[in-house]
Length: 155
Ligand SMILES: [Mg+2]
Image (cartoon, rainbow, N blue to C red; front, side):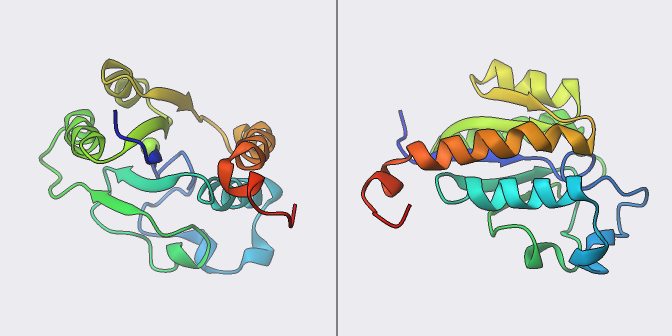
């Protein structure tokens, strides 16, 4: 079992709910975002203190200002439109599992979540922005329980 814990996460309809995939609305301004978008951003930034992050997406590139808001992570961008996305994600998970303890996968689609489950990865289904509100509390619990914070007195 690999020991470095990792969270894999989809982008579209999971952390980004825009209509056009190339139009990353977050790039406009943080202040224009709704509260739920901010929960998604805050949750992922919190979780990145305990977990390595990997972006496992059917996209072929990141939105322009993505990393102004979301933590750096291992990119798994689909190389071609021709790949079937769940199979592409399977390839990504298998590669990640060689190096990391892949604990969770966040996605909006059952077919992608089913592939993760087959590989022993717990799926968290997101279907609307508001789903991030309870996840934000969970993220705090995760981070407060981590050995990192037990060894540091600032909290
Ligand atoms: Mg998606």
